Amino acid sequence: MTNHVHILLTHAEEGSAGVLMKRLGQRYVQYINRTYKRSGILWEGRFRSCIIQQENYLLACQRYIEFNPVHAGMVDIQKNIDGPVTALMPQGKNVKS
Image (cartoon, rainbow, N blue to C red; front, side, top):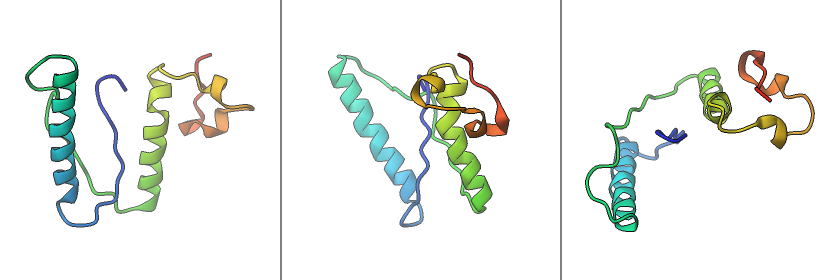
């Protein structure tokens, strides 16, 4: 995605996801600012998170993350997969050719 990132992770300790995102954000922003000779913030807002407790919701989140670029028109799945793709798409939606 061009304006956001989806990360699905399992944390080892309480609060470790927040620490990870803080460190990732700080280091990535420093890298981008140094590389592109810029300054200031890079992120639009604070990260959002939720705890997934049900397996069917976990699978729905995985599917959403995988197909989000397809739905946004950034990827043509038909060029990357042989055979019918309708069964792979959430809710059986077809992909634009």
